[in-house]
Image (cartoon, rainbow, N blue to C red; front, top):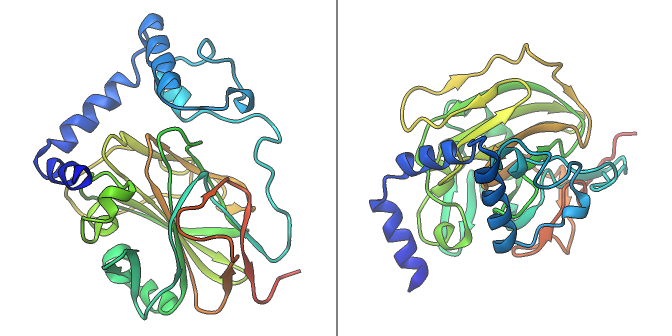
Length: 287
């Protein structure tokens, strides 16, 4: 009942206005205010401060700086196996498995299509038909930086405007096509195992999505799909390299072609994962 009420309220709430408000509050630089925000957050959520690179709260200029915090060296070791696919983020697995043709499972009784998810990137639909996918939800307390799950070359990036529904389990279980309704950033890679697409899905209170190539991208409810300029940084990435970060929590979806990667047996809906952990294995490891 509570989850249905939460979903119903999201249809009524001015989601973009609320997200804009959170964006500005999270960037207040008045020391007393930003410290109070950080300390209040730490009372609500269990954050492991021992792994944070900087001193909390003193070394962070704003609450958002703390939210997108870097971790200390060695806090997230990246599995170095030649045939491993690693988690791109800390979070909880929403769904993972094999596509049924061009359809991905969102929750029990709900699915969505590759064409709707990829939007302007319809030439990619064939590459991922009957492929494998995983959707990882980043809760507010999680580490919010997203990293490369394998070696590859970033060849295209598209920003897709959209709505800002929450993407937690309650909403994903009740809002049809939530990942195709929300704004998102589609990152396309060429790899030794074929194409890889990683999608950063925006959500309620996610004030922006940032990458080293694009800088900060603010939410837009409507408009054309934007092809991003990738010339700001080298496009070759290694497993574990930084791809971007959410300014507040959201979801990461990865897509791989058919019969390339098999998820590990313990990588099932509801389990938590940490960036750098091996979550899948390629059928034909590249040496």
